[in-house]
Length: 253
Picture (cartoon, rainbow, N blue to C red):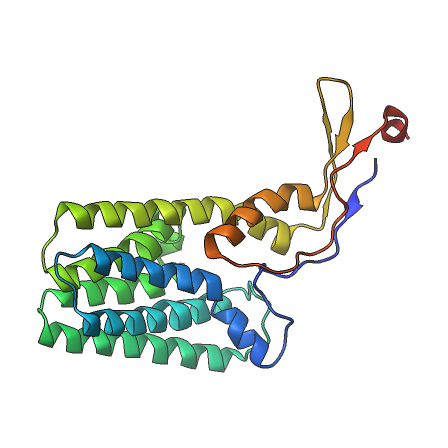
């Protein structure tokens, strides 16, 4: 069986058609940004006392730092989303987003506790170090992804409300870390198929002797289906030749 050519899919299941305002929507990684902000809400809800104004401030800060700044820096570093946004605009978005997040953090530290300054500094550092792959990419790993985008927002939100660490906070942080590990595990092979794969070929031989063809959709559908379910993202998928049984004659030919 010859290699089955893939029509080039979008860089992500949520990516819009390139060009204009659609690039800015795609840049925000909408379902993943919402997922990230949900960790802020989980940390907030786990605190023994909650403050609505602090939740709003945290959501704005993390949206600015991650939804805008981190994703703009990521797009600058290799154009993984294939947007047409000028590099100067991406740099401006990154600077404004991070500056706004840091400003909110400093104001919050003055109103709540100076201990928040440690979270502000750590957050600003990881946004730049992770997305620009500084220090030889040491901070751009699966573990740091889960720590930075899963555990950290939950921990920051919990501490901003409780100003101490308790068991419910630890459990919330661990849960968000593991959810981020799940996201990364599912998304890594999907990104490889969507962004770096030209063709897919292969077969599976069943115990009963039947042979099943493998195509791009077979490899992508399960992990991406899980991501769609976890982010409640529905919508059409790229067409692909479905999994099918083929005879030995077809295979030999």
